[in-house]
Image (tube, rainbow, N blue to C red; front, side, top):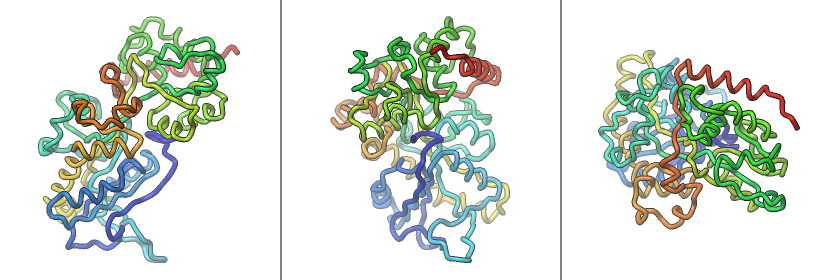
Length: 404
């Protein structure tokens, strides 16, 4: 299924004359690397028409999964060069240059910690972005990290979020109706005895422990699990309910009817609901986990010469980066991202209801109610001590015997 580390298709998209291994010195080029289908193609042409100078070429390469994006960032940091994309000539090695490293790259917030720790990206000067201040504080705080990747009120901004989603409960209407089981509305419904061995969930400790914490009234980011009363007992009971744990195939049992309820990402739910009218999904009323895709700027490699550094850090490139980031935060662009992709633009949570199209307001998976979002949160990195607690508890629960 699609989300964070598990997108399954690979593709690339070029605007104008196409991707080429020849650098055209007469045209400014904005090179982007993003998750496939995370940016509507029509936005590229509209962006080119909206800026000065207008003779700008946009190259957007779509990658299949964030793991592959991280691998490329690591390679660029190591070599200081990237291959030109486009038509390959047999027996002729593709051109390589620092200039072919994309201006901006899309990664999920779960990968931000690693990218910062490995010095694969550099901070972004958001003070130059006209639309940055229009975002709610949650979006501005998400990429504010120290140089170790931990969230910090005094940290720098390491990315600009351009779309987001939530962890949701997905269900089979027909199977629940036949068994006279109410449609779930919150996390507590997963403990319904009628759903024993009828649930598939993400094989992710922070997600499963987190939703259990949320059910008990705690935060996904609780630093000391010993403070959560009944956590071990509730997790053990939930483990008895679960038939499948999977990182990328948790929806397949739901589609086939082997499970009746699943816990997964809204982006996956939107895809499967469009194909199966018997499947629905809800954002839990007590709040949920949120995820975001962010534009980040690749770090300038220490391998580069002074001339090469100037080539990838010149004023034109910096200006294009700023223009693209601001463009992604505009109301019209935000609406198109929210309508034509399976996620939501962050600006929408700042807009008045009258400024949002009726189509988006009616789609609760795309834009959950404000009272639910106010109780939702991003999953932030843990201290080493806290991480050890979570990992130990997860091993205990996953290894526990299921009494069928």
